[in-house]
Image 1 (tube, helix red, strand yellow):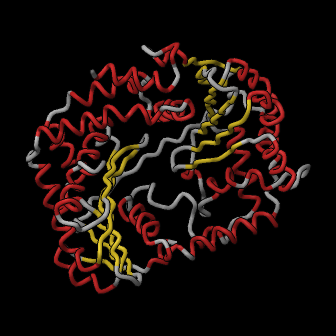
Image 2 (tube, rainbow, N blue to C red):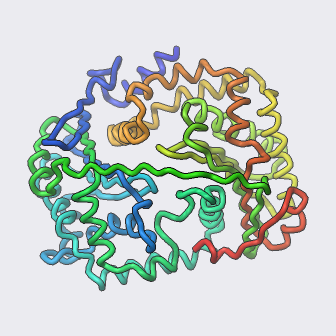
Image 3 (tube, helix red, strand yellow):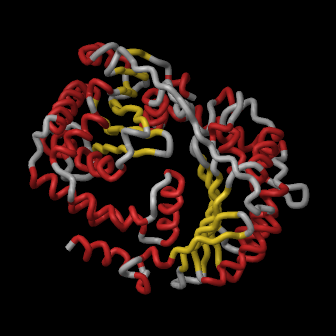
Amino acid sequence: MKKYILLLAFFINGFTEAAVDPLKNVKRLKWENLEVVYLKDDRFPVYNISIYFADGALKDGPVKGVADATLSFLSLGTKRYPRKKLVEHLEFYGVGYSSQVTHEYSVFDITGLDKDLYPTLKKVCHLFKKADFPVQEVNKERKRILDSLKNIISNPSGLASRVFREESLSGSPYSYPVGGKIKDIKKWKREHFIKHLSYLNNNVKKRIYITGPESVLRAQKIINQDCGWTGKGQYQRVETYKMSKSKNLPRITLVPIPGNQAQVRLGRFLTKDMVKDPDIVHLTSKFLGGGFTSQLMQMLRVKSGLTYGVYAFAGGQKQYGRSGISTSTKKESLPELLKKTQEVIKKVIAGEINPQHLQQTKGLVAGSYLFGFESSTAFISGLSYLDHVGRPYKSLMEFPERVYNYSIKNISSMSKTLFDWESMNIVIVGPKSLKRELSKFGKVDVKNYKEFL
């Protein structure tokens, strides 16, 4: 049955030629010294090219947010083409492009029609080689970003998640926002972006991920010549750090804002050793808070009516990981919600787990996991992540089988690692009056939300 689910996922996805082994369509290539991963997909005449750079926001110097903004600002203009003409050109061909920057790595994605590969990819290479970051355009973007940050109080959920990341990863190199804070953004200069783009082009290791019909491989000439990427730059970010253990856990942070709701975030920093088995990490988080039948959802919503929804997550990057629980409630019911959350976590850690409930979660996780990669773009993105963390591609296919082999003991042990109450960072965004009730759970630090902007 498990193998049937696995094969069905890829049959529906369209990889009919390689239904038994979908990785059969994946090839590793060398374009000069540049690593390329190609996934053949003849279903549609479209291409997706994902450019992975082995460094991210940790490259930022005293002025943060530069690495993220550099890739976001690529289309602001060059000396040859102003922003308006660049955007019109790319929109004419229906090109989609986006970037993602984490602390450890950066990615730039391009999608378009295979027949238009030549003019579209050449234009993207022109951006990487000649982006000029015009001051007037940078100022417009800076204002837009600053206005968004200043108005974040109108989005309590977004504010809570921003605060939670910084607080839960405090003491690590990964706590500072990738996009920087207001004080950083005000200092941005075009020279910062020009310097970082040159660094990406010339110094950093790159890997190209491509999906589409075989004709898309003609991109080699454009990438090697027009982008100038031949694999000479080989720097890869590896960060070393030491975490000091806090003596005041669980650590509670209250960020006061007006209103009748309390946004709740709980979780912790995880070392890479804690997430060395990502499959049990994933299953454990889903069992605790990954759907309507999860333990927290059943307790907090179905039985108690304390919240509309609750979500638990846990996972890792190459050098670190983090876990979290996200929910919200009325300010009056916050103490009860925290108390019942604690009860659920303690029961799971103690191994008080209904075998039938665990089996249901296993079936849900195993059956839905590969559907997360149902598009070729998502599938190749998964391969990119595996390369980044140093795991073999076959681990994608082994996941459903592995999930069924974990026991109640495995889940309870991992729950203590990921969600032990005594190791929690608790962030509450809500009325200041909540401090009194929160004090019953531990020492409360009250912080102005502007500290996190």
